[in-house]
Image (cartoon, rainbow, N blue to C red):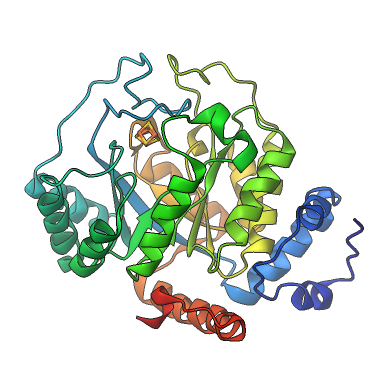
Length: 359
Ligand code: SF4
């Protein structure tokens, strides 16, 4: 399929929020000359966001290792021998101490991750208390705890959880090469419960796992054709962990990673596209290209659950060299109102009910 490019006007016309992307259209975007793709993505980015602001979150592992799932990239899976020391669920007071430190370092959102298939009944009161107390600090809250049923999703929403992270990882076709202990549809069901409970969604995937470009296309199509786009779309570059089945995967061309960011930006113009795992292995120029291509969110802090991340100082220096400012929470909220307005129009047209935006 041919994608013509006649400058910002055409980019604007084509950046209407859509939920009916065909793979051929997405392939045509991936196939554009690199400069044309980045120009289009950057033009769309500027319609919806300030191009020099990046939302910053901090991620804490609140329960580490011994996960019963078999995700082939993950250091925390009990199926792989990575030498990771497993840890029990952290105490609420410890989590709050970390959240205060994250806030002092400029994070607007505090994300808490537990290596579970799904939360157990006895863990729920503890995680709900974490949500309430982190929220009381004035931070946005996000959790990733595995699969949720309807009641768990509602309990988290009632406690004040803003975002729930649950990634699709890759295309439906490639998924069973990567994970066999939960299905693609299990993941989509959890996302539906999160939406129905009124929370915002953080959902993306990982590239560089040996998948083909068609799988990156399939992943982005799946995300972009959800009834409502995830508010946050993390795009991870595989961090190769020794002892995992993907520990010696071939490197993905960094420019293909930038292309993936750019296409995500075009398909989901009002979402925050997050540069997630893999930044430690990425040079500054690649990260700069990602920001130009529409990435506008990242994790700061020296660890991402169990893998290394650039130090705060290194990020500050990069932001300073690029003239990028961390987004303050107030701005994030007004951007979410913009997101609500834009996606609400589409929702009304389609007669769909968008819980998250109604609250
Ligand atoms: S990615 Fe999550 S669910 Fe999969 S093994 Fe790791 S901690 Fe468990």
